Image 1 (cartoon, rainbow, N blue to C red):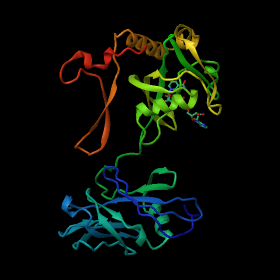
Image 2 (image 1 turned 120 degrees about the horizontal axis):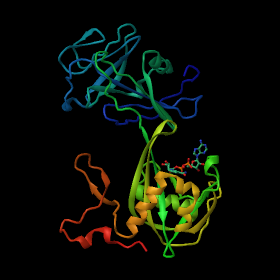
Image 3 (image 1 turned 90 degrees about the vertical axis):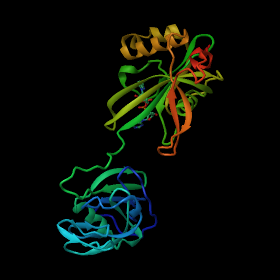
Image 4 (image 1 turned 45 degrees about the vertical axis):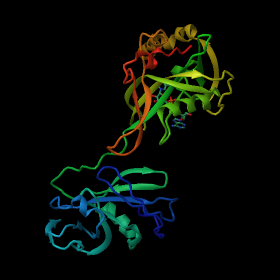
Length: 335
Ligand SMILES: NC(=O)c1ccc[n+]([C@@H]2O[C@H](COP(=O)([O-])OP(=O)(O)OC[C@H]3O[C@@H](n4cnc5c(N)ncnc54)[C@H](O)[C@@H]3O)[C@@H](O)[C@H]2O)c1
């Protein structure tokens, strides 16, 4: 941090993560490393939703203090009265800020006086929250007597595996170019990670296409696995998806994949690594149960929740509202 040089603030961002709001500042010296900071106002929960986005100032000094609301209250031991007065205890630097809906303030980065401000943020007890390409987010929870309510950084990665079976009861399998020595030579399902803002159903189709060149149609999530500390200390949600092949020609992605082929399901299951692996055994059993209609997976249904107004995919599998079992995709034949 200390070696970063100053450049002008060019972007104001506002990232909403529950209680967190933030701002960005790219610096020269470090390729596009805007900083996010977040803060929360101490004192009575005086900021109602009607106070949201009212103009405040956020003070930075050797201690941090901020205010909102017309009624006086204390921040860092300092009595504050005015909505716009924000005072630091020692330096008294004032930053323009907007109140947020959670009793916090969003500092206007365009008004930040210098980089020292940012270096100082860490010295003042701001903590790294997370980093993405192009920014680092720092947060600070002011009320010392309260535990921080800021949501933690994302804890999971989401992976998909494609179970693609053709009419000859052959499953589409790959050998990975880079893998643990213990699975070298294993013919496995194509797997990969979901991209940001990508759906599970389209991510599975994309991964299969990228690795094998085969076009598919998503059918159902058959099962998912939840495991911890899988990569970069993140937990892992792995969705095993049944896909229907729409083409059969294999063109591998030679960067990631050593080989791919259509393999008879019985041969696939007979591989020692698969036979000895309880999870894969169970996955195969579930897939076979699905093929014989003894089991039904989850299919995505698009809807918008009024809760957050976001278009969403709800994965479920029940008979439709008219209670007509023929409307359930459990009856769909995959082969
Ligand atoms: N691969 C398997 O056999 C397997 C088995 C069970 C579950 N899964 C699940 O599949 C999902 C995807 O996992 P995966 O094994 O396909 O992903 P992966 O580890 O193969 O990573 C996907 C891609 O990222 C690259 N990559 C990953 N880490 C790298 C690094 N440190 N440096 C350079 N490149 C790197 C890989 O080469 C690969 O191209 C996860 O949810 C996982 O739990 C995979």
